[in-house]
Amino acid sequence: MRWPVNWIGITAKMRTEFDTQKERCRKAASMQEIWSEETIFDKKISKFGYRVEGKIKEALQVLRTAKFIKHEKNYIAHPIRVAEYCLDFSETSSEDLIVLSLLHNILEVADYSPQELLLKFGRNVYEGCVLLTVDRDLQKKDPSYHRTYYQKLLIAPVHVQLVKIMDKLDNLLVLFIQPSEEICRLYLDEIEEYLLPLVAVGASSLMPVFKKLVEENRTWPHQSLEDFLKKNAAT
Image (tube, rainbow, N blue to C red; front, side):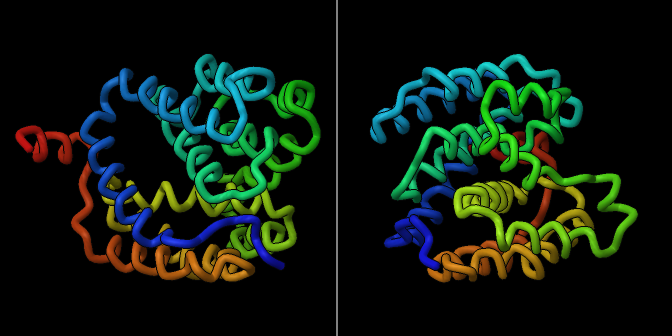
């Protein structure tokens, strides 16, 4: 199976994107950066013939107004970036792909009901979100949880797989501001053992990018966002 993704020049693009992410991290403490992300997103979707209206507008409104239970409000910059990546690399973008990338983990990080998700955004988005949502409590109790979770993704629709890969890509690009070395190690182990086989299904050109990011994150010094901002305040 071939992915509906254009991987030409992706390595160079990702290195440029990493530098951009570092710059964004300097501004991450400011709510203004969130709206900057939305402006970038608005311009990007217009190139694909989409506008911030309909389900896309509703998805952004959910992100703006949701009661987040695991993250600060500026977390919404992450799903917006995931949506940008999906638009950048997908040759067959759709409204459902954009909405799914925006809401891919809304059931995990916010007080938002599955019933409301199904009612507002339809079965495709709902089923994609259910497949992508990680049960953190079960993950801690069940040693086989990751294996089962990724096995389901290996046979999931292509657009769901794409959102998962771009989600992990964005996380890897900012993993250097996770101060816990142990959390980073476990996360990178998950990437190598479970995500890379998903990438290999039909996105082998992306494999060097992930391997390079894993390698670099195993050697880079990790620090909190606050420490990163202090050290880079004058640069």
